[in-house]
Length: 213
Image (cartoon, rainbow, N blue to C red; front, top):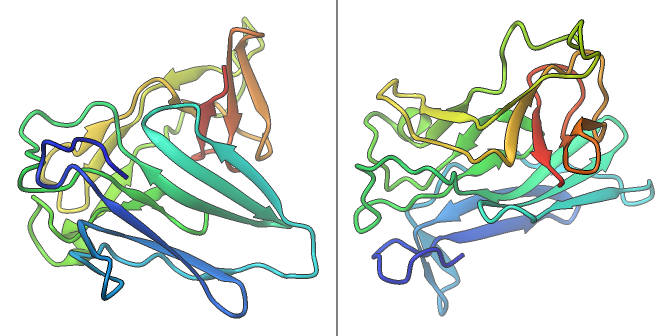
């Protein structure tokens, strides 16, 4: 993905792996050797999650927002997220001539955990320096608002490094926290019907919602 051609690491490479048993995983690289077909400064590879080739598979593409290119893969209770997110509000100190800025979600729909390439500004092993925590969970965001009877939405999500060294970015209002108790994945939350609507990527609380319109 090309984000800024003027920057040393303004281009980031996403590799999606499909195994013979239809296991899906992915990782990010800061550089790619087109001859050797290998990348450099790899992120942690996400857990391989398999789908059943003889059962129905549903896909949902999330490409409206310029900060994300995500595909949700649903089969039964399994929810797999492939693709990347580049939060709109990058920290001012994050220099893309030194560090790439892009992240991928944990494959198995565990949206609290994201991974960045190993060329990272944060300290510690890759387990901490290359792992980002997203704040989708807010204990009070469960039930509908008692006055409006609608689900309240908090637009914009913060991202923090596992190394506890500040903030790794903030998304635009296209990504949000929702009072999502007892909701199902792919439920649509209508803040203003026909004008501002979000789709829930996973069921229950602690799941992200992406703006549709």
